Image 1 (cartoon, one colour):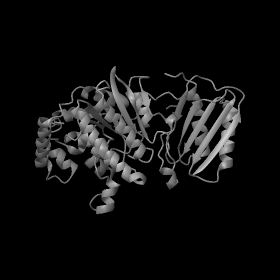
Image 2 (cartoon, helix red, strand yellow; image 1 turned 180 degrees about the vertical axis):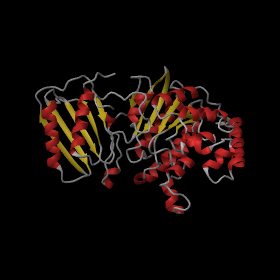
Image 3 (tube, rainbow over the protein chains, first blue to last red; image 1 turned 60 degrees about the vertical axis):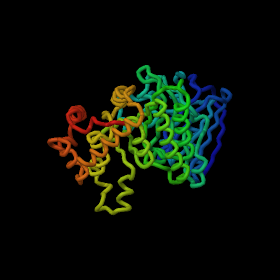
Image 4 (tube, chains in turn brown, green; image 1 turned 30 degrees about the vertical axis):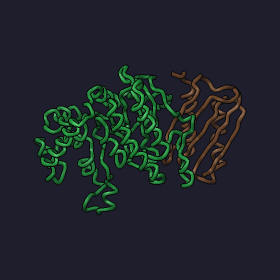
Length: 105
Length: 309
């Protein structure tokens, strides 16, 4: 298994008040993304576990683009990957921050 | 979850939904509280050694919620993750839920099991087999303590292997046309007995033998739902509070029912023959008809309603 840990400083905090959310499932070509609002307001940490080796640079590019676009400050993001394509990863990350924008029930 | 993260409507397909979507749509809005949630990272400790990814919930979501105001305990399997299998962590989560209901009468007296599983996870086979056996025992003990355990079957993986055994141990089963129950799955039968015995790619054959309509008609399931959360909810509500006492009289009645069924249908070599023997005038049409017409048909079939469990 490949394990990748990335850290970012963001422009500001992610919107919303939800404490945590999970989107997606671990299946072939899919992934699950767990988001937790536990870090300082301008920090974001992303940890990826994937059985697919050799795509570190692609992961870094996709996640950096996501962080630049959404400024997910405060988020600890954990990913269990089932071999998802980069576009699927980007969509799931976006779905995750949108889910975190909703209030906790 | 939809694009915005909100659950799809209650009319979305149960078959195509994830386990979390099914729970969100089945229960009263916002009533679900998860036990051992993904943030606790109760993952399989074994999958990494096979170079396989784990899931934060190990494909088993357990918790409590309300169904039309009634408190219930719930467990939902994610059929897309490893085929919705029973393993060390997923099995322990389900077992803990059922044993808690068995031991604490202040907890809800109804457990809903949203099964979606091909059976035991082969990479954790010993733990999985043990979990299935312990869950079956716990369900029997919980039922004896007055808890109703209702299985909801309509997911992509069906309820096979250990999930089929567990479904059969429940107080009642709700099934949709897409749902399937059995012990040995179609591919396994074909692998072991040959394609002439069972062609697992013949969908009409597979559903004719294991599918929801056959199971409902021959009394192998207690209620039939359309492929939506709204319909599963309605069917489950209709069964709640109707479980018979789990005693010797009920078990004797069930034994008599099953013996009668073997007598009536044991000579049939295909689903259509069973349906004909049950009095369905046109078995082929019964496979193709719309859900409401099928529900009306079931009401007229002798044998579909004599489930004693």
